[in-house]
Image 1 (tube, one colour):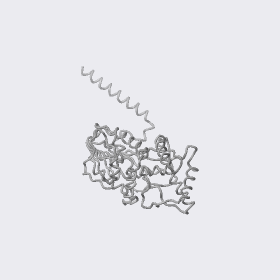
Image 2 (tube, helix red, strand yellow):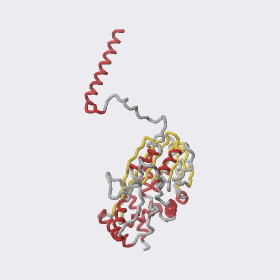
Image 3 (cartoon, helix red, strand yellow):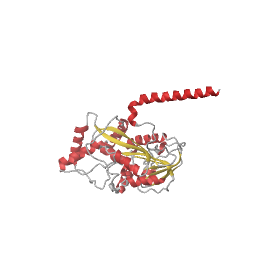
Image 4 (cartoon, helix red, strand yellow):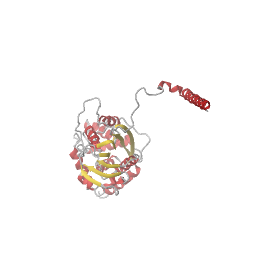
Length: 361
């Protein structure tokens, strides 16, 4: 029993080294998205116990080796910072929403941001957050569902792996939109619907087999389609969305569940069960290994949805008016002919101009 923490610590470090992005990885075995249709009247779904999530975050801060569980957040946080570097401008005021231990903010440079606000719902987690050595930073305890900032005050709001625990995503996005100045940018990422689908399937099958039914043990996540709709409805334009999928190998299902707890990513939905029967857990581990495992262990998929949206401004590029094009799409098969005709017209026009110049001389 005394060696278990050391084994878990060493495994967490090993998991961080095994983190990789495969070329393709999709699963539709279980529908796990929070469904929000843009065609229906908006309803706030109280899915998560926000107080329980804050307590879960607080508990990670008292772990003696909490850093070893941050391998996913460290990797994704740096990638979010890298995406910020692609925006070639200096932001006067930036807000890190759900900053955690500063996975993004610690990398920010002085030529990118003048003033930075780091916000999180957990005060204990915020105290452990690392700040940028170059940028003046203010830490604030803020609930993502209730932003205290003035309207039109920020140039950029970014968030890394925090918003998937928000109940009122439409309301959160609208508040971010109001907080941003015109031509401000909202950039971030959140876990998508395929995250740890292997664990979800194994637990459901084991509960059906042993208990005759199942209850949710993995929190629901938003799909890429719904995320795009919500950002668009909140007023953001020029949207860009893409997906990263990380596959990490674990010795068994139990190491995965232990690391999820160390990350503060354990379930906090209101419908969660307080515990699992021992025989159900053993059955789930066996099913997990049988369905997905190999000689190296069992895989766990983490799907990350990345997004960028802009608050509208007249200075932004606008779409051309309908019908203003020179050629029709139906003429694409005649593209070579059209190119030759254009070159011929240019040549005729040049000859005409030369003749006019000769007559004048």
